[in-house]
Length: 171
Image (cartoon, rainbow, N blue to C red; front, side, top):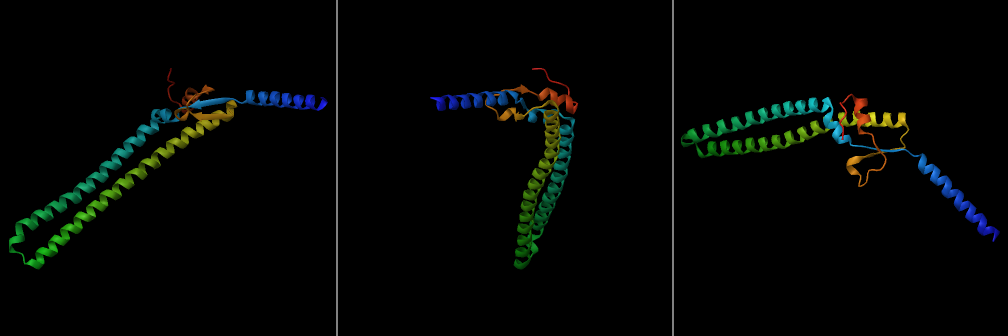
């Protein structure tokens, strides 16, 4: 009987302390993706990416034009060419076309890498602001709002906006 009371007392004590501990945790959530899009850095990054893409497209168009000119020249002069010269020109044309396809693939990869690099810098800025705010205001956990099924705790998105100097959005 005494042992049952002791176990009961320990269980109650554990529940009480766990309850206090859980209540002491401050939870928050933030929509960092939305905030990223609102940062002036995002617009700057978008423009830089557009400019980078434009430069790549101009280069690819130049290669395409050179291939077309080579092909037109081949078409106009093929009558007077020997079979060997014709084969060499056709092989050259195929190689140029393959090189263009390779350049297109490389351009797509470069574009994706550039986009990732630019967005990474913005993400770091937002994440740093969230971390500093959480430490300053005593949040135990801050969750990403877009991945939550239920958003318990406080939405700290506007606090993060203020910290980053973005106008606050009222819900």
